[in-house]
Amino acid sequence: MIIKPFKLERYYTLYEFSAEYSICNSDCEAMTIKDLLSLEEGSVDKFHDLHLGYTETKGHPELRRDISTIYTTISSEDLMVCTGAQEPIYLFSQGVLNAEDEVIVQSPCYQSLASVPESLGCKVLNWMVKYIDEKPTFDLDELKNMITEKTKVIYLNTPHNPTGFHFSKEEQLAIVEIARAKNILIFCDEVYRELEHHPDYQIPSFADAYENGVAVGVMSKSYGLPGLRIGWVATRNKAVIEKMAIMKEYTTICNSAPSEFLAGVALRNRSTILARNLEIIHTNLPHYESFFERHADLFSWYQPNAGPIAFVKMKFDSDDMLFAEKALQEKKVLLLPGGIYDYNGFFRVGFGRKKMIESLLKFEEFIVENKIAK
Ligand SMILES: Cc1ncc(COP(=O)(O)O)c(C=O)c1O
Image 1 (cartoon, rainbow, N blue to C red):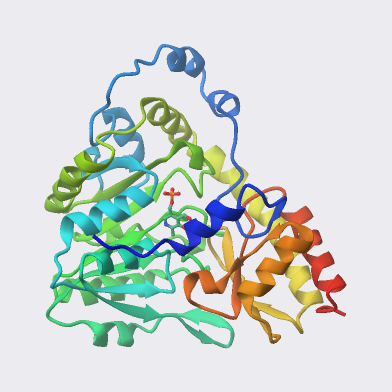
Image 2: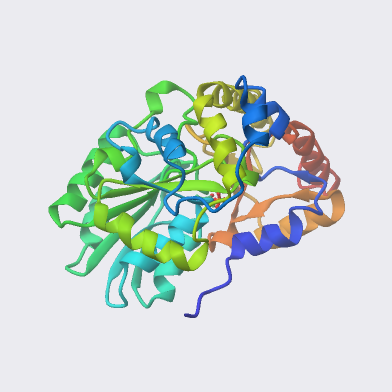
């Protein structure tokens, strides 16, 4: 198998831990094991008594029960616990696709959604974002017209990385109808789900909305616990989950027992954790709003209604990759340039972490000192 290097993960590998400031992270503020365990009485002793043997390939039955409470039609039998969200993305494509298949990928995208099918020899068609009045949109007629007899999967991501776009319930229904008419699988990366900025923007998981919907969830983003490396796949399509389980025996076999335990504690207290993370987002967003108001001549942004990230358009003539490199060199501020997504002229910002306000001020220093801003 020949697979392209993962541009975004390469970039983070190189710079994430050396940058002093970052305005681009996509995860919410993390917490310590101590703070997490304090959410549930008796959990410290249970954690210390945990047996460190192998766990079940599909995940501990209690954890699967906890995960199933996020969904309306998904039972613990319809779930497999995985390592982060990256593993189920990989296992799904490896398990389900053949070289002659075609897939459609909502784009620009988190690269593995497109690169894994491509590495298997599949034809990958990009369902590209269209900016209308500075707002990202995805044209449903265009999606319909991209489908052929060979289309096996539509890959979606909502709330979307990097644009911050989130489908409405009506758009979701229309996409499900398009897929159902041709018996196409929908694979939806839902790692930013449950971080809707207002309950009106919540939509069902694609695993609930469609019998052939395959949804990926994770502890990393909305819950701010990426160090657990616990994610999962949810689907009522039994054949898909079996194919993925067979693949998993070649990757990680099973999950980390301590992480499964801690993920269970977090999920049983998920309303507390989500409320904390949404509060951070609501504290940070006004700072971006006023920043982009102050610098409306330089940047335009679509303020998302869900998730912890947005995509910012650069209105001045500059290579986004060089611009990010300079910000890092001069002020140790990490940006995520659009070139990482093969979508130039933009950069991604994040607002799920507490240090963002300080980092944004550093970034402002950078644009003022470089006379980009007046
Ligand atoms: C859309 C999307 N999917 C999947 C992942 C991978 O998540 P994890 O780090 O939990 O494997 C990311 C991480 O940035 C992401 O943004």
